[in-house]
Image 1 (cartoon, one colour):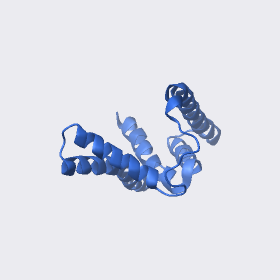
Image 2 (cartoon, one colour; image 1 turned 90 degrees about the vertical axis):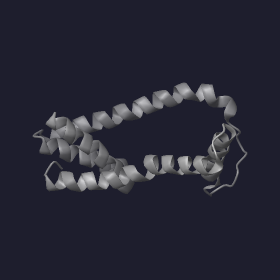
Image 3 (tube, helix red, strand yellow; image 1 turned 45 degrees about the vertical axis):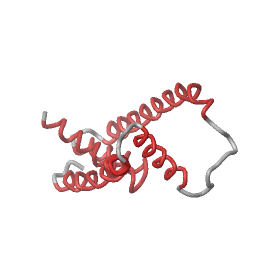
Image 4 (cartoon, rainbow, N blue to C red; image 1 turned 180 degrees about the vertical axis):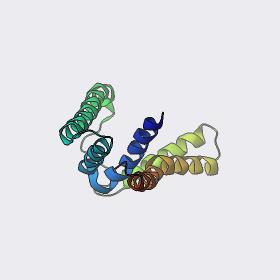
Length: 141
């Protein structure tokens, strides 16, 4: 059970390292973690690369499955505002309006959308940084 806590910590730390340094930083974090667990460098690098490759392939397969399903929803050549965050803002507005249409008050719908966005986009890297630092102090990384 103790090892699984370290593995979950590695995943939390990767949310920070991916944001800070991209996929190469997450790969380096995984390699260092495996080395600290007693694996030799070759095994650590190979295992980390296989995990990254497997993740990429699974995401690609899911994308290829979803593409034909969503194809009719694409409108090529029509953009809200090129080069801005307007699409994200319009998406949030649509979700708020959808919740309001479902009978939720405007204030509650707005709060729910921003709380969800905070919990899914902004908090994981913050928690990941604390986990990353904790793992470094304990020499798990």
